[in-house]
Amino acid sequence: MKHEVSFLSLKERRWYCMLSFFVAMSLLGLIVAPLLAGFRITLDDVRHIRLHWLAACLGVSALVVSIDAWRLKVLLAQHSERLGFFAGVKIVLIYAFFSALTPTSFGGELSMIYLLKRQGLSSGTATSSTVARSLLPLIILLPTFLIASILIPDALPHYLSHSFRVFALVSAALIGGFLFLRMERRAFGDAIPKEETIVREEQGAKKYFWALIGVVWKFYRETEDAFADMVTYGWFNNLKIVFLTVAHLFTMYSLGPLAAKIFGLNVPFFKGILTLCMVHLIVYVSPSPAGSGVAEAVFGIAFKPFIESSGFLVVAFWRFFAEYGRVLVGGVLTFIHLRMPEKIEDHPRDHLQEPDPAVNDMSGILTKYRD
Image (cartoon, rainbow, N blue to C red; front, side):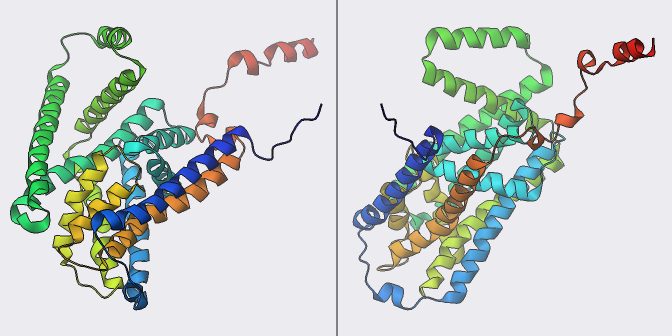
């Protein structure tokens, strides 16, 4: 009986299937988005491309990744953990790859936790740092949207502006109340001992929730722990992290007006940044992969008051430099990482562990030969 020999392992076939899914969704976005946004693309739109602005977008895109890696490095430094800059760049790029493959970036969070644990970090430190890194932009985007929707009411269609203002107000109130309660518990202590609280939560999750709800509940607990850790960092360290987060968002959104200049179009710089900030909230909380046509169309509709025929190309270029460029590099790094064998030396803290006296005790052998 003959057996077919496969040149790809099961794990590798799964990763290639996910990569194919990402490519298919990206192509679907390129086809569907112009139709949904109502754009008409002609050869005149791509005939006169400014190469110096294209090079500027490449430089700013590299700066976005560098700031994000530095922000992760600072977050881990609060836990007395050291992470190399280039290791942080690799983790951020692989995170972008998995975020594009899964809804609401959940796969990216899991991949970052796994990679940080591969660096030798504890599970709690890896999880809390990942959660804090992901939620800080959302916390900053909400008040920014409130300010932008008031100062620039025509940046979005009226119905989007009004509904998002309500959404941002409710979300900001919930997050503010959550942080206040967490800081209060941190300052005055819990009424119930922590061990008993964990037991009650686990029993409640098993009794009342399905497995998926249990995962969401676990994520909520990790989020609470992440904010509790941030309270202990001190105001100066928290301001440093917030500053790096703002710098990361600013450079990423500035790619929008820069992408317009590639085609010789002028988009108001700050107005374009605030527009991207507001519309990015839709993609940030929507359960859709980053390459979906719906996300592209929403960006296109938002930019339609500024530019006409080349609007979709501008949005596509922004998405490429802000998301797809990182995703493609992250995909290459992911496959390189998958083909690397597991090594004990990859964990930098293994040599710091105390030796086992039962294994390394040579006193009995030395006594035998001496006698």
